Image (cartoon, rainbow, N blue to C red; front, side):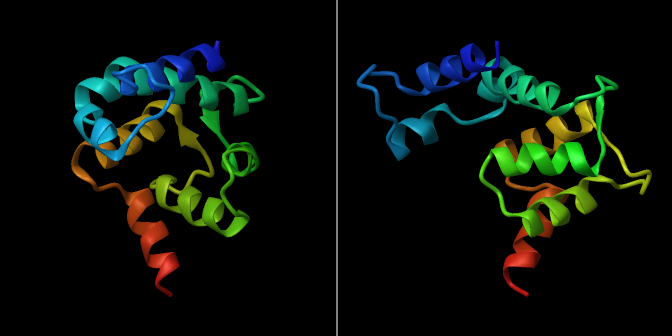
Length: 122
């Protein structure tokens, strides 16, 4: 299911179906509608795969495994988790996680992105 959702994301960007996505294609594709229609289900499926206890939240270990699987370094995962765990309860809610990514994709801002930017420049 996750693979199918991600293939749908790629296909929606690859408008000329040549197997490649140029920056111009991505730029034309990106936005709230694209996120809501194809990215949210794809990213949600990855969240669900990493949610090993199926409680709708990630603890630090689940989140770190997801970020590691996506190729992010451990310190990156720590900073992102801390930024997303706004109430400090040690968990990240699925909908809040997806809302942060949507915010970044649509208007370029999110607490996770700010934390990662700050970490990169420290």
